[in-house]
Amino acid sequence: MNYIRKIKKHPFGGSYLAINLFGFIFTLRELDEVELNHELIHSAQQRELLYLPFFIWYCIEWLFLFFKYKNWNTAYYNIRFEREAYIHQEDLNYLKTRKHYRYN
Ligand SMILES: [Zn+2]
Image (tube, rainbow, N blue to C red; front, side):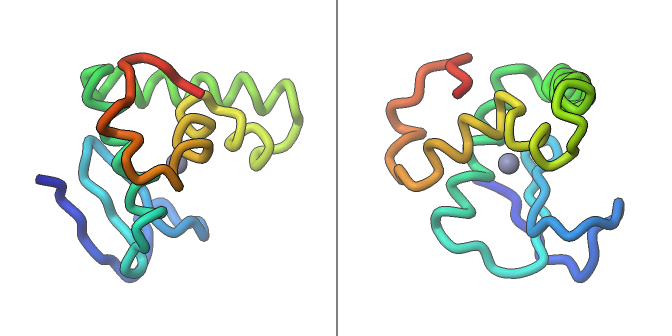
Protein backbone atom coordinates (compact mmCIF):
# COMPACT_ATOMS: atom_id res chain seq x y z
CA MET A 1 0.00 0.00 0.00
CA ASN A 2 1.23 3.45 -0.80
CA TYR A 3 0.73 6.46 1.35
CA ILE A 4 -0.52 9.46 -0.62
CA ARG A 5 -1.39 12.71 1.07
CA LYS A 6 -2.81 15.88 -0.45
CA ILE A 7 -1.22 19.06 0.85
CA LYS A 8 -1.74 22.75 0.13
CA LYS A 9 1.90 23.78 0.02
CA HIS A 10 5.22 21.95 -0.13
CA PRO A 11 7.35 22.29 2.98
CA PHE A 12 10.39 23.28 0.92
CA GLY A 13 8.51 25.63 -1.42
CA GLY A 14 8.85 25.16 -5.14
CA SER A 15 6.26 24.66 -7.83
CA TYR A 16 6.55 20.92 -8.34
CA LEU A 17 3.36 18.88 -8.16
CA ALA A 18 4.39 15.99 -5.96
CA ILE A 19 7.26 14.77 -3.90
CA ASN A 20 8.03 11.27 -2.74
CA LEU A 21 9.81 11.07 0.58
CA PHE A 22 10.62 7.59 1.84
CA GLY A 23 7.71 6.14 -0.11
CA PHE A 24 5.27 8.76 1.19
CA ILE A 25 3.83 10.79 -1.67
CA PHE A 26 2.82 14.38 -0.96
CA THR A 27 0.90 16.07 -3.74
CA LEU A 28 -0.83 19.39 -4.36
CA ARG A 29 -3.71 17.74 -6.19
CA GLU A 30 -5.06 14.35 -7.24
CA LEU A 31 -2.49 12.62 -9.45
CA ASP A 32 -3.51 11.09 -12.77
CA GLU A 33 -2.37 7.54 -13.44
CA VAL A 34 0.78 8.59 -15.30
CA GLU A 35 1.82 11.01 -12.54
CA LEU A 36 1.08 8.35 -9.94
CA ASN A 37 3.12 5.79 -11.89
CA HIS A 38 6.04 8.25 -11.94
CA GLU A 39 5.91 8.53 -8.16
CA LEU A 40 5.54 4.77 -7.71
CA ILE A 41 8.67 4.24 -9.82
CA HIS A 42 10.46 6.51 -7.33
CA SER A 43 9.05 4.41 -4.48
CA ALA A 44 10.56 1.29 -6.09
CA GLN A 45 13.93 3.05 -6.54
CA GLN A 46 13.93 4.24 -2.94
CA ARG A 47 13.00 0.82 -1.60
CA GLU A 48 15.75 -0.99 -3.46
CA LEU A 49 18.34 1.55 -2.30
CA LEU A 50 17.04 1.35 1.26
CA TYR A 51 15.73 4.93 1.23
CA LEU A 52 18.44 7.09 2.77
CA PRO A 53 21.17 6.21 0.22
CA PHE A 54 18.65 7.08 -2.53
CA PHE A 55 18.26 10.63 -1.26
CA ILE A 56 21.99 11.10 -0.77
CA TRP A 57 22.71 9.77 -4.27
CA TYR A 58 19.85 11.86 -5.72
CA CYS A 59 21.13 15.12 -4.20
CA ILE A 60 24.78 14.49 -5.07
CA GLU A 61 23.88 13.61 -8.67
CA TRP A 62 21.64 16.68 -9.00
CA LEU A 63 24.44 18.91 -7.71
CA PHE A 64 27.00 17.24 -9.98
CA LEU A 65 24.70 17.65 -13.00
CA PHE A 66 24.04 21.26 -12.06
CA PHE A 67 27.75 22.01 -12.33
CA LYS A 68 27.76 20.19 -15.64
CA TYR A 69 24.70 21.91 -17.19
CA LYS A 70 24.61 25.15 -15.14
CA ASN A 71 20.83 24.77 -15.02
CA TRP A 72 18.78 23.21 -12.21
CA ASN A 73 15.97 22.04 -14.50
CA THR A 74 18.23 20.37 -17.04
CA ALA A 75 20.17 18.82 -14.18
CA TYR A 76 16.93 17.55 -12.61
CA TYR A 77 15.71 15.87 -15.80
CA ASN A 78 19.06 14.13 -16.17
CA ILE A 79 19.19 12.61 -12.70
CA ARG A 80 19.17 8.87 -13.42
CA PHE A 81 16.15 8.30 -11.16
CA GLU A 82 14.13 10.99 -12.94
CA ARG A 83 15.15 9.69 -16.34
CA GLU A 84 13.88 6.23 -15.49
CA ALA A 85 10.64 7.65 -14.06
CA TYR A 86 9.98 9.99 -17.01
CA ILE A 87 10.86 7.44 -19.68
CA HIS A 88 8.60 4.75 -18.22
CA GLN A 89 5.82 6.70 -16.48
CA GLU A 90 3.35 6.12 -19.31
CA ASP A 91 3.88 2.38 -19.24
CA LEU A 92 1.46 1.49 -16.46
CA ASN A 93 2.73 -2.09 -16.40
CA TYR A 94 6.35 -1.02 -16.09
CA LEU A 95 6.64 -1.76 -12.38
CA LYS A 96 5.48 -5.34 -12.94
CA THR A 97 8.43 -6.10 -15.18
CA ARG A 98 11.01 -3.58 -13.99
CA LYS A 99 14.45 -4.97 -13.21
CA HIS A 100 16.25 -3.76 -10.10
CA TYR A 101 18.85 -1.03 -10.41
CA ARG A 102 18.09 -0.37 -14.08
CA TYR A 103 17.94 3.37 -13.99
CA ASN A 104 17.08 5.09 -17.28
ZN1 LIG B 1 10.36 12.34 -10.39
